[in-house]
Length: 128
Image (cartoon, rainbow, N blue to C red; front, side, top):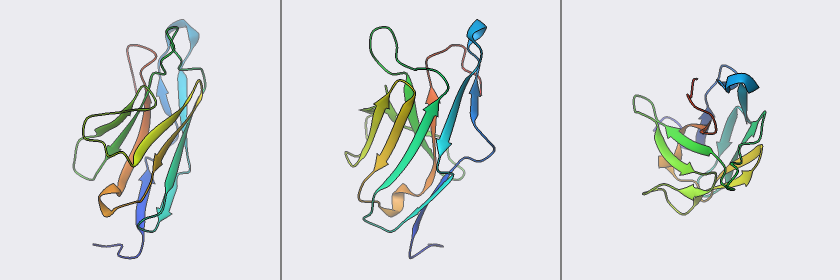
């Protein structure tokens, strides 16, 4: 393991993720921080801010969190801002509504190392 002391969580670099939103303009998602380094057992928080509210008229928030490891396809962790996808451990949780969202990973483990990103499902078609 190349980082025996610290677990490293990196976010995708290259600026915010852009999504088309028809005549309303693009929805911009901005993640912070760009990089997180934590020790095993600690907690990591990753924030995602949207340029517009992602709360649907029926009350759900169209925001998902994904984890991607090198050479692998992205894996869905959280959808509707706070609902765990099948197989997502309870120590991984999502929160927030409207424009501000957070992914929290408690009791960090080695398997948690990877890239994390948020994606909005408020608008279709989705473009990145």
